[in-house]
Image 1 (tube, helix red, strand yellow):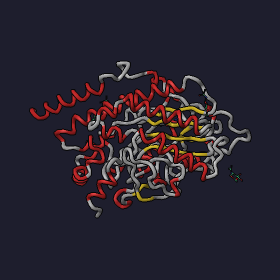
Image 2 (cartoon, helix red, strand yellow):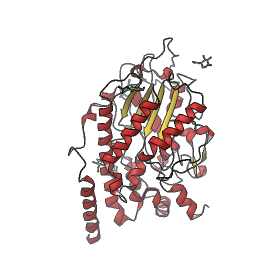
Image 3 (cartoon, helix red, strand yellow):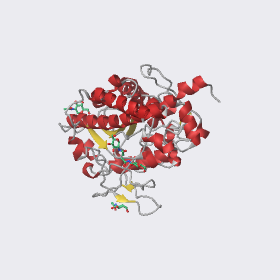
Image 4 (cartoon, rainbow, N blue to C red):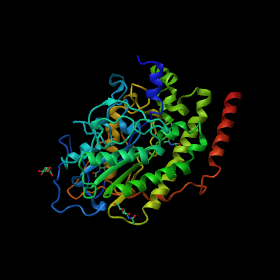
Length: 408
Ligand SMILES: *[C@@H]1O[C@H](CO)[C@@H](O)[C@H](O)[C@H]1NC(C)=O
Ligand SMILES: *[C@@H]1O[C@H](CO)[C@@H](O)[C@H](O)[C@H]1NC(C)=O
Ligand SMILES: *[C@@H]1O[C@H](CO)[C@@H](O)[C@H](O)[C@H]1NC(C)=O
Ligand SMILES: *[C@@H]1O[C@H](CO)[C@@H](O)[C@H](O)[C@H]1NC(C)=O
Ligand SMILES: *[C@@H]1O[C@H](CO)[C@@H](O)[C@H](O)[C@H]1NC(C)=O
């Protein structure tokens, strides 16, 4: 049994999770006809010339940045201990037989490189002290660190990826890349404690910085941006499990705002959801802004399959038995399938939910491409046209509901 200090250290700031997406049809991708799998197509003789027409077989390198969800903390549950099973990570894992984005791509290009393998002890990035944390050899181009917030990505994680590309002998100028970005759950988990520092406008400015840095450091990259979901619902999803109630009481610091005492945490959870919505809206505005000029060597694909995802009634098999908080291996597989399907679906048809816990992967056709771009509702910006006063408003509402709870 780890000491309580170790518990705190390991779990603090680790983050949440969730899943994903889409099965819409379009011109070239089709449903898998049976468990015999999908046909595969070899690389066309002509090289890829634009990020707007990149086929699965033309992806040379996969990369990812983010938090413990991308590090796959706890994915193997209690039996995995305090480990990150990075080889199972939805967006960047490459363990044999795992449902992951790189493994879907590998079927079309066995030479794709950069995916993580195996499992290792968790290393923790903690707010301002995320530099020089332990990196394992098989992390490869998984730059995610458990505990990361959006402010940690652009230097801690992108610097690591730059060095690692060099170490792996990847020709950064010539190779075509897919980088998946999913971050913000740890920001949401602290939003009730330090509101000023977690303002949606500030969140979006860090996000913009990350995207601009990716554009300048990693040419020929399609960036997958996956929206945040209402993380706080993990509380409801697990509250009727006595074991989980105990774990949350013990290690509520993992997500302070969701797992505090019931009398306090309810308004905090509402606040987290309001903020998740605001963060997503702000990030969509940033992406719209950065996508105004078409670029043949850099594009962003916005994936909303998490936006309306309601994890309140998610079965326990989707949630790590280690901490009743992180995604299970099964969740990683589902999210990977949702992402793959969303990438093969034109932006205007992308789903905003995961329609089924047994979602089947689409089969890529010979001419299928990974579509960049955002669904049309990326036009929607934060409704008041700004966030001034927003945080104060939420804090006020929170105080009011707190006193309501007390009196009622
Ligand atoms: C795939 O199957 C789903 C559910 O049966 C269906 O709604 C969808 O239209 C199918 N898509 C294609 C491309 O055939
Ligand atoms: C993979 O790389 C090897 C060595 O560079 C090459 O011989 C082989 O043709 C490549 N395979 C595919 C499917 O591109
Ligand atoms: C297009 O992307 C490349 C990197 O792939 C970047 O160097 C260049 O500045 C971008 N162009 C514009 C107009 O943003
Ligand atoms: C997420 O939270 C927002 C803000 O409270 C709410 O409007 C939305 O309906 C929630 N979505 C889901 C799927 O729970
Ligand atoms: C989410 O699911 C729960 C339980 O199934 C339900 O009570 C709640 O209304 C749902 N929330 C939304 C926003 O649909």
